[in-house]
Image (cartoon, rainbow, N blue to C red; front, side, top):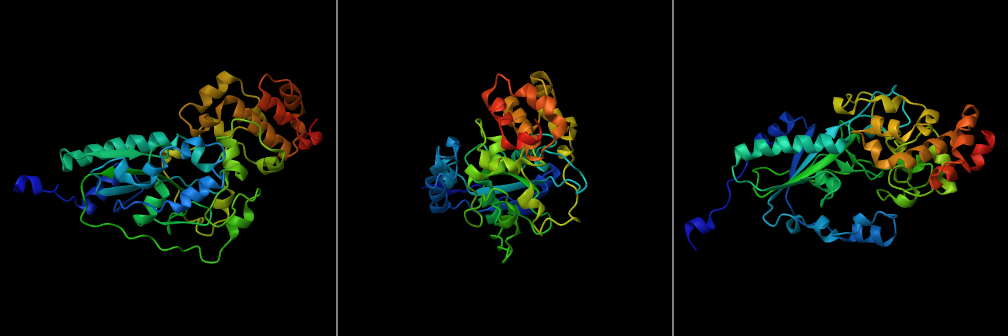
Length: 343
């Protein structure tokens, strides 16, 4: 073997790479060694049916666990986070993370910028980057990189920023000179998030059963929401922040997050206004927002479920009109025992 064959890529400065990430407007950045993830928890979660109908979670699960199957020459996982905390007094029926620009776009824009910085530092560097639609388990890598710990609510918790974080990762084929240490678990005996969940979506600490989770039903579920979970829609139309609102690590003094998450006009609407949107209005208002994920009929369905859960008698005309809607899931959402107090 020649000297050229045995030469390894130069090592990047973790400090310089982190500074580059912060310059690209990431709130946090950390580095983890690309060791495979234990398959047992994911396999057990999938086998238990907790992924509901999210079949994409089962595809290429081996690659989700072993980053070398995605980037064979990988030597470093960069964990990235953007803070999105909203002021406590701000009110919306949309979860905090989804009131402004879609976090996928924010992360992708900034990862492109970070890659340009890294290429300038190390010409020829190879990378793979994703938010939560690619082959990576962002929370695991963020915990390994020392950005926080995965709490009992299944979310990453940072000791100073709480769980108000969106995550992404970047794989590099360069090493860094300093890797993070896995963060200690600091939830202690606290069970506030587990007790507060209105649909009992936590079969055990840190494990979420999507079939019972309001976030799943309001975002991913394309069918009708089981009647047993509809009361959980009180005060919410898209997503759910309950397990974060009650977490003692999410203190009031945490700084307000990135401006990209500032609410857009859709976030200020009432549940009745959301349910009554035309398709054109929904497309216009939800453009560039994560709310678009629910799709038009899913969003109106959610608005109706929220009206029923809060027993809003002023919404009678909307409920009566939508009970004849051409969308089965919208019409079904008006056929709810709670609407007896509305109709």
